[in-house]
Image (cartoon, rainbow, N blue to C red; front, side, top):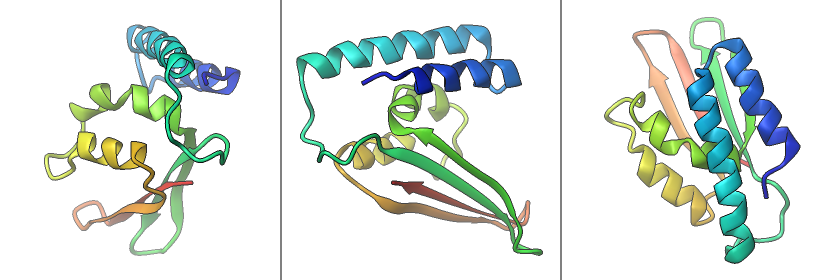
Length: 125
């Protein structure tokens, strides 16, 4: 179900410049459509509450955490198409989204970017 937290997160992303106002409007509209769709057809998800998508970026040289970001999965799922154009070609973002929708949990991606000296880990909690 679409929550105020998800809508606020979209507005914060617009404010910080992560996405444009137009992209934010599309995300908000998609959240509403997804909410209506869920009301009509409940998924087989276990009753664990709201699932979270977490990205951790760590500096390989210092071991210091640079980013530890959490977002509601429902917000991520509606933006998969938008994010697919920015994803590296070796990351199959639609396959990733399908795995999460099918119930994948825990660490689902662990990448080392030697060029930038970073480790990127993605979790669904």
